[in-house]
Length: 140
Image (cartoon, rainbow, N blue to C red; front, side, top):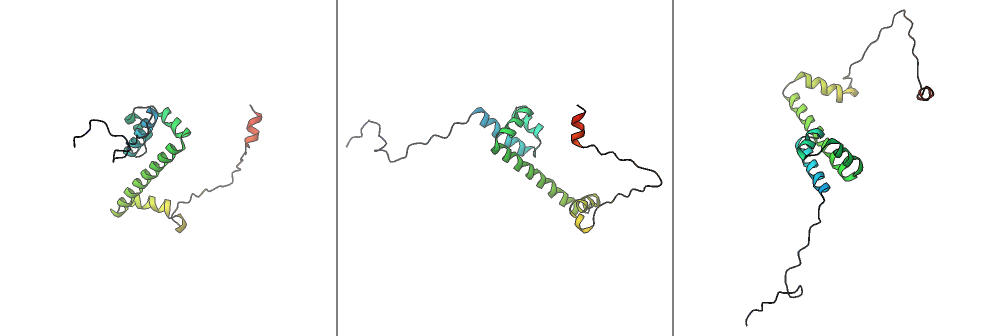
């Protein structure tokens, strides 16, 4: 039986119709580039903006106005903090005393690892003026 040259209709075709992916706007593409650049530069906004080819003001507009973009940016900030903490732990393992002291001052306060400042006041009179925010409004 000779084959027909007619194109198959959807009912005759055994394959499903191709679904079109959603079209991305230039802003969507720029936001994606900014997120990728932020990951590369560990959350440093200026470096990420240079890599993505936009200004910092644009980045901060997206950050303020797009909750999903803000969420992803904040997540990258946490990732960068984790990265720094892992390096701090490596330095502690390598017996770096400065890193060990820093860690204990930050994380070991509840165990007494903190610095106290002692202020010695002798026979001098000290006067402290407290200015309330409402008092500042009257001066304007």
